[in-house]
Structure formats: structure tokens, C-alpha cells
Image (cartoon, one colour):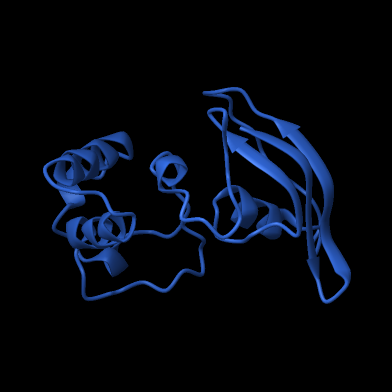
Length: 137
């Protein structure tokens, strides 16, 4: 992932200003800073949940385009903020299936991808548990 001059402003107030990042595939980073430093805004932009005011984001060489659905890029992203509304009546499988459909994943690939994700995060045994029974930490 690469960013160039990534900036986000809210009502003429800079939340994130000219962030240049270069994160190699497979690398793990921590993002730290005081409250109000723009950490959440930066993560939301990187996850395509928030459009930058200015600047560019590239994932695997593909540029995120403002106002576009960016489906090719979004298939590689996962983002779930702690305060995201849960659909508590859904089980884990149905919850993942719901979001996979929002990302336009089609069967049989959708079922296979959900299974891969469950294995990756070691939640295969919880696939039929209600989503609100899982820890959010």
C-alpha cells in the first residue's frame, strides 16, 4: 500500500495532512498517536470507508478512485471498527455472508472466501454462533 499526499479536511479543519506511506506486502505496522491526531480518519481512508480531500492511495499498484466503487481493490481489504453496528441476530457465517454480498462477491467463490476468512482468524468452530457472543477486543 502506498499513499501520496493523503489529506482529509472537515469544515476547513485538517484531520490528516500530507501523509506519505509505503507499506510492503505482508508488513505489520502499528498506528499510534493522541486522541484527535487523525488515526481513525487515516484508517478509514485506507479502508475506502472515507474519501480523502486530496492525495492518492494505491493498493497492489491499483489507484483508489474517488467516487468509484473500487471493487477490485476492496476484495483485498477488511475493516471493522469497534463501534460498527452489529446485527446481533445474525450468526458469524451469515454476518460475513451479508458483507461479502455488499462487496458483490458471487457464489461459489463467496462461500469459499468466507471459509478462508474463518480459518484465517480461527473462528471456524464459531461459524454458527451469534455475532454478539464474540469478543470485540
